[in-house]
Image 1 (cartoon, helix red, strand yellow):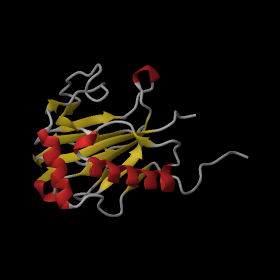
Image 2: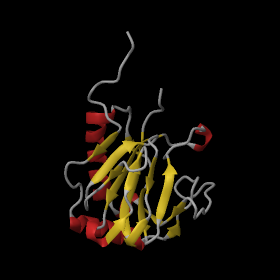
Image 3: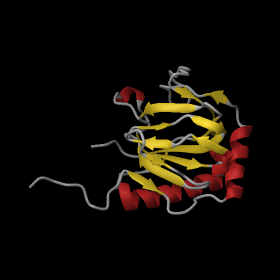
Length: 195
């Protein structure tokens, strides 16, 4: 008999409600804006190792939110991730392994098709298994900027404070922002190596 995955498994999971209130979203925006802002690079871990600025692939500004600065935010993210993992992914040993990335996509900003982990494990520690994007902006503040997963046109229309969790090996992109400024929180969660 050919083995099959359990029917409860899913590698794309939208939250049914907000994980952060509008007030909490603004607190996260303020925290992100208070940290050093850098132009986002590609091919790096935490914006540090080996990244290059490539405006044909990615145009946005990012900062990293320290754990000690937003402990309640990290506790909430850990709680929601563990519930989501238990109900949908079933990955082993999941935990927060990296700081949260605050991202702003100005008009014209985008991030072309990519995955959040590497095929070469020399570049990979920690093991990224689940990625998350949470929309911090009210939806009326920008146009475009859709998060597309797997293929063009398969877009997720998030509302403020809502998030999507997806397997880090799923191909995705942020389409160009055509008006305004899209603000989001991005997280990666790691666990024991895939086997």
